[in-house]
Length: 376
Image 1: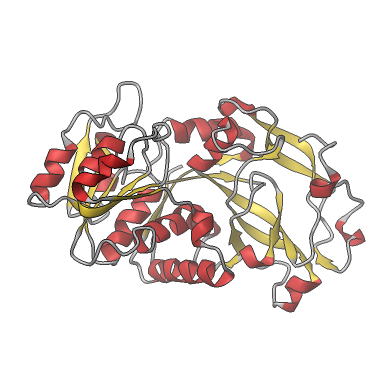
Image 2: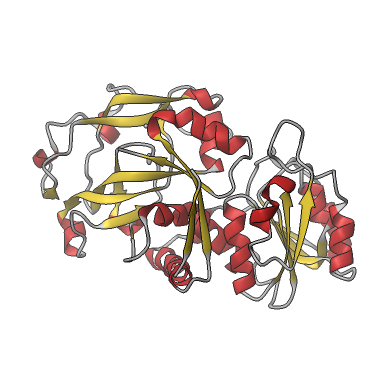
């Protein structure tokens, strides 16, 4: 079986077109629902972009309305991801105000007739990725639901949705098949969440993997099966890797016998851009998917000419464009979990009331696995 390690909530005048006031879900037909869904709920809301304390917990936010073809999920967990911090800070703009999060897991509390016709029932355990998961209830299109298999906990299933699916497309598709079995892949930050998944999946696909991590996360990095682990000092006062403490490019070239890596998977961003480009093999691809240390600055495309290299800046939504693609990726992940081929580390589950603390913890680089909110 799979391995899980556990280490440790808009104003009521918000637009009725999205979160309209309600007199109980039974007034919205056709519908099947639990009778206990309240008209308001607890949610973590951003009204003004800013630091982690811009995320405020409100207790009287309107519960979302069900839509045709959709369901209402009563959330038990919400995943905390770096992209949530980018939304909160305004790096990736969203209309204000908004409920944070885009990853959740729980049980279905209400079902439209269209969803019921697909066999979806009240009480089904599901995970999903749509905006607004930092709340007790979320409206989710049926096409976005992932049924949680028997034997997989909701905390693990929730962890799979963004980080697991992201790691899946990064290691299976985003590299455009420019890396083949037996070739080298550099993955930064394998001691953290998404790239723990990515390192393991890259190995499952037959790649040789060089991982980087901080000294404080070397135990995690060493457990993932990397062929080479480059352990870095930590930036004083933080848990982040100091990417200047080791000459990573020289070490990569030594390990790969001067060839470099056919793919570099980089969620760190500003601090690792030069390292990533310098570590590429001829006709290798720099896959830049995150900004943990800051956004990657613009650079001239002529930088890539020395090795005829490629660069891509992908996002998950473009790699789950159809229901079939979403389910195919999830099925492979859940299959690996059941077969014991993936290890999932749930680092910490903060109560939703500690919404700001959850973001601060993630941004400080403290996590050694998935960070969640637990929602009551």
